Image (cartoon, rainbow over all chains, first blue to last red; front, side, top):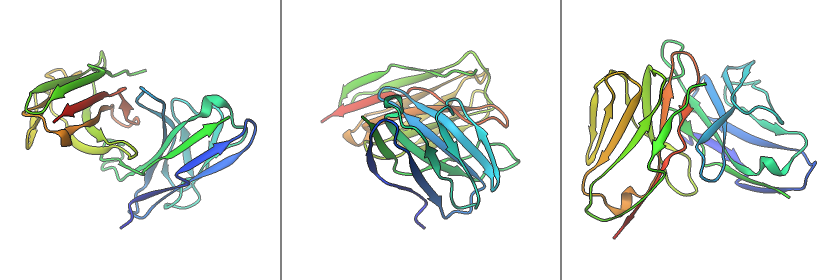
Length: 116
Length: 110
């Protein structure tokens, strides 16, 4: 199994450009997450999804959008890139028991984004 | 908002030394997880603790969940260069998403 895959690995954007960060998992997990990790900081939750067609905002959703049309895929969209969005983005998935998001999260390798 | 404070932020030690890192909060968590992240990779789960006072061991790593389920510690015995990485704690509160601390960056020098 590939687990959680993310593309691209690196990207440089100019201010105002848009892009989509791709995330896919082959573990049939219902829950998927997008985090950003800034230098010296932990992971901050951007958006998450508890199943196809259901998404919800995390701690830092402004400037981002997501969709979940299938169980496998959870793309993250940046519409108007800003320097403040320079970060490493991680996608993760989990298969919770009992409806709670407390089980193991499996992370992808990350996408390093720079906005100039 | 639930917050997790990790200390120390940075730790550099010699191979063979022992160390303890801490994860503290004013909030009660239903469970707490520890992840290790190596450069250029995503975090990988080490352990989940659920019961107040619970102690779990993973080879040279010992994890403890506080009696009140507000804090946790990670103790490494005889650290090795392979232990180098960013250690993140994450707390779960029922049906809410995990809350991550900022991490402790550990460097073990041979």
